Image 1 (cartoon, rainbow, N blue to C red):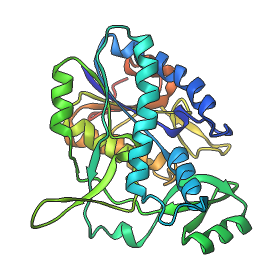
Image 2 (cartoon, rainbow, N blue to C red):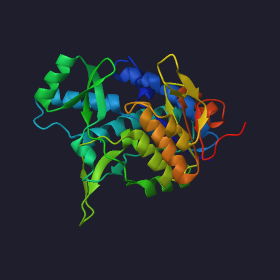
Image 3 (cartoon, rainbow, N blue to C red):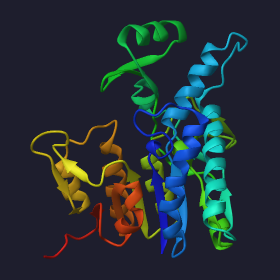
Image 4 (cartoon, rainbow, N blue to C red):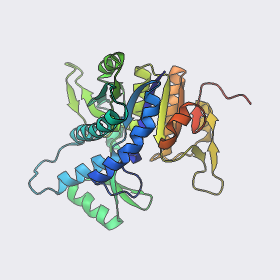
Length: 308
């Protein structure tokens, strides 16, 4: 079975963690353990989040007095793919001795006229107090928005249209490699309508929607979205909270109410993959990855309702 695994940003930096290299190195061991058990039995492709890392790099670049023109978001995205890809390769090299492992900087094609460029919504980087966030927005030209207990930078998040390196990923899988790709939604690029030349876009593509597209293009059997909660929940965080154990795409959407900044893109990605391919998708906790694929944990999304 071919499985695309989408790791949440909390795989390397859990809630409340300091964004230090040593912290990310320690957390990666959990990822390697969770993935290895599946990789021994199946073809595996890994994609991952990058919100904490790209936000930190953007902040560092903007604050450096020797940098006149900080790197745009597309190049920061490429940096995070290399950083996180390297950590994953090292950890999986030790966990899966003898396995071919490749980390690929991957580009995601988006439309230059996507309306998302005029309405930034994607939250990146750390939380700030309101006054600090407003000051940063004035000085750096950021857009900001309220998020949980603070304020964060928001950037454009256009819809993914194609994975530029999809054929290369196919070739790597055919060689028996475990492939790490499309991290952070991939490096966003637009294509010139006349020449086809690629140009970087000032944006961050949603990683879950990219994972669904990647799984579709690779003809995967299973899309596994891993996060820090064991299930999708209706009325999450309230006294009426209830786990969703299984659902069809339609039922998942009808349940609705999933926040755009957290569970919303995950449920939409799972629903899209199942609708377009007839495969299976699931959402659940990183440490239960093996159990989720074998039907013992998580929220399963399937084309038909379960019986019994």
